[in-house]
Image: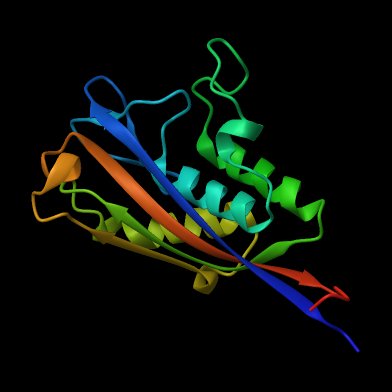
Length: 168
């Protein structure tokens, strides 16, 4: 009899908006006057997804696996590379993605027109069906740091599956 073990993980990330940086969200570059400040490309959505994946596998977080040290290999790295490496890390434990549900919180720019391209890009990076990644965008109704356009945050929930596990 075949069993499937499932695990759920939650991820959250936030980065400050600043001038002089490109805005990367969901693996794509979005035209905007501000970008996100961070050690890598600061893609909050990809970082939240990575943390959710690692959390579901009980393997700590993105900062543990890809530490933000000045001058290291991860400085200014494309977060899609970190996502691919994260999947390799959990695959070594026998896990694969079941599905992902995430939300980006930003006042501007309007993100809904970009969601299909984000889904397609991330599905390609992860090798999953586009139907297995849900991305939503919302505002905070002008409240808090997001509402004041000081930063952007993202939340992600991931379901991991492990086939043929005898403990389910």
